[in-house]
Image 1: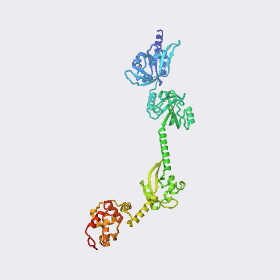
Image 2: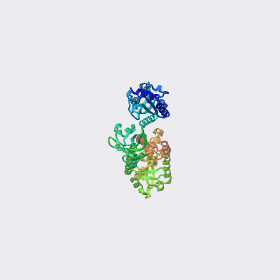
Image 3: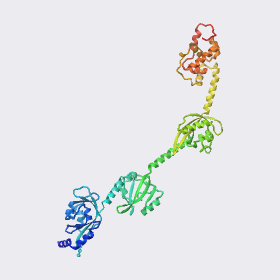
Image 4: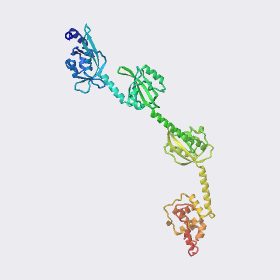
Length: 512
């Protein structure tokens, strides 16, 4: 208790007045506390950091201060009475950089963040004479750090932060954990090279050098090892930052794995297309829409045209003179330029040897990389066309003299020769009895003279009947008329049988 008189003398002494004058204009807040726990004085900065205007508003004693202000650590843990910095300084403890959040009593949210250190002034006997709290308002700093922390954690872009002093990770966001599958605690206990964020990078040596110098690390592709095995392709870059008072490096990442998978899928697709294109038995070629130049041809195409790839690739088809006529080339190129696909169009093609061949051509627009192209497909139908021509010639020859063929064969040949003679809206009822008789004899293969003798009429009358029959049923040839009748189940046999059974009529030489 012997210290009390000394304290009394200090309160009113010139030394205290001089001390107050010295610290009054400081930016840091200063609170002077008597060893008897009474608050002697505070400068304006300290008052402003507590939102009060006078020392009395801080509290007359340490107990009053505790009642008026609630303190907690940054982790939201409230301070017990003995942990208050003002209590610790009264107990003679020396400390520095204690960070506390300060709230006015009765309020849940803190108003300020204080960084506090202590100072003990002693007398000649080295006894505490005045206790000093030195306060800095670091609210703005910690608000900025809080905003950075929230932004860092909420940012979907993967990121980690390491201290430059020991290269240990001190922060990791959810984006990095999601990208790699690492556990947060496992990451924060390791270094940059334990979880190598620049593994297999093409500029790894430069990255290591910049990291050791605390300088910006440029973007580079790297492969990060995953905890379950395998790697992930990323772009990584580093930016120096200060976290608190510690120099650090912020690593940010872009996940390239989707791109790598897409490129692999595209590569496999292109390989399959190339194999199919090369081995296809149909002649195939790929051309550019611009100028109709050929970009690639398969073996079947070179076999069909006789041109080697070196002779035809890079040249427009028009320059190669592949089409039979310029008009055909212009028509095909106009359809291609207009974006119209060609489907099974019969064309005539001139191969390298000059012999014209019949082909069926189809086209399909395709996209190769960034280029718009067209896929050509050609099929040689020369053999089929030749067979058709031979068959038509044979039918024409047979239809001129069918006496040696059975009626069923004649009918089948007639149908093959005249496939266009499909049933129309005209029926047998549209024909007169005489016209049906004429048609029945046509079905038997008789010519006009034979029909005239059979019916006992003139040749002109028969020709007139035949012309009217053609006009009514929409044909212009005898075999087509026979096919039309057969298609309707009319062969004329029953009609002619009825006519033969009827009493013979006197031959007539005029039209019936």
